[in-house]
Amino acid sequence: MGAPDLLHKGFNAAMRWDLTELDSLDDLHLPRGAIKKAQELAALLFNAEETFFLVNGVTVGLISLFLAFCRPGDKVLLTRISHKAALHGIALSGARPVFLPVEKDSSGFPRNISAAVVRQALQEHPDARLLLVTSPSYWGITADLPAIKQITARHGVIFAVDEAHGTHLPFYGGKLPHSAAAGADIWLHSAHKSLGALTPGAFLHLGKKNLVSPIKFWLQVMQTSSPSYPVMISLDLIRRQMALKGKVLFSRSWNWAGYFRQELEKKGVQLLSPLKKDGFKLDLCRITLFCPRGEGHYLAKRLAQKYRFQVEMCDNSFLLAIVGPSQLLFSADDLARAFSRARRESLVFNPGTTASSIAMDFSPSFFREESKTFFHEHKKEESFPAFCLTPREAIYSPSLVVPLEKSPGKICSEMVVLSPPGIPVLSPGEVITEKVVCYLLQKRAEKTLFQGASDPVLKTIKVVTGDNKI
Image (cartoon, rainbow, N blue to C red):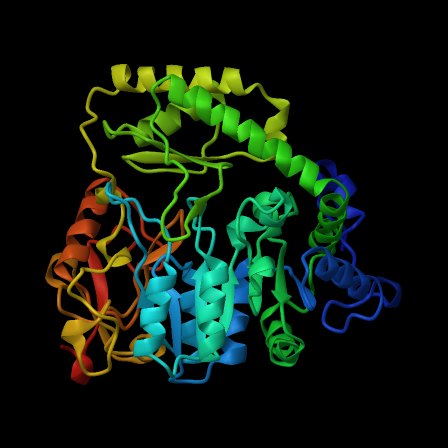
């Protein structure tokens, strides 16, 4: 069948690349020619033993990771700022998650996981199969990956890194820690996020040859048997551009972002600043601007509608802007002035804003109370957070719908996700706490919609019933 006329008109050039698995064009699931060569060149660029093209995003890589290396009941350690796709993979594999808290600064803004937390977690869970770290975080904060690698190596744990928001880090010239340099066993790159590949093009990299066979099988299971050739071609083309120009482009981006940050601060804008504690570092190209009057949502709308500047995400107390090579075409001074004007206008034309605490914009489930320890079976009162069932067990258990206000103390049967950034506030099998419900009620009052929930406005929530009810 021929393509619709409008599709031809809008995508004429791309459609010439929309091909299929002919002999001369190779096959993603049995690469022997062009795709094999393209993946080998990507592995060479990113210093991996083997690289796989992902046409379903880092999402399919995370799901395949857990299916490949975790059996039902295996413990996996992961940070509380992990993407929902990691929980999807855990649910499919039947593994048991052990959530690790992230550190926070004095204002309540999340940093990342510390090496000390990883060390403590592995002492308490020496039988853990795998550790997944998200670095950099959605807000550009990197963990101390070299220190974490040393710890996991001593314990014989697979060290995986969701580096979806850090595909460009190797081209910063050593300014920030990244997976390949740290010696991670597995890491994932979302090439469409920061390098410019077509959505949802991504890479899965392996640091050890003995990991190839299981991951290859599950990628064939989980990826479409009709992969997009435009997406795969874009992965190869972006690989070529990074090999030829990557360090120059991202060195300029880093410098542009540094100057832009200086201009914003001169105009009184408070920013998330580089960190010098626990090995945390900040990607200067991810710029978090604080909005102490709670004007974040209005400011983001003002920037988009009047100044045609789209931020990555916003909340009441902050918004996140991302700088990449494409911003080099614009004047940092002009953009800083636009931000400053939009901020003044948002305070004048949106008088309903009130002082907003940064801590109020992040779920208490991200963090751990000082008196709490990590998850121990049959010790729900000491858990962080309390997981009575694996996600798979909770999903397949009998359930019922209850008002959100009446859910504390019950076991969650579904995933409740704020997107962006796509991080679960609640996961199946987790005990719902009063503090998390208060946070969700606050977000509900702001007319937030929730992914994963059977009721996206969250008037109700699905919980486990029957013998598994608390």
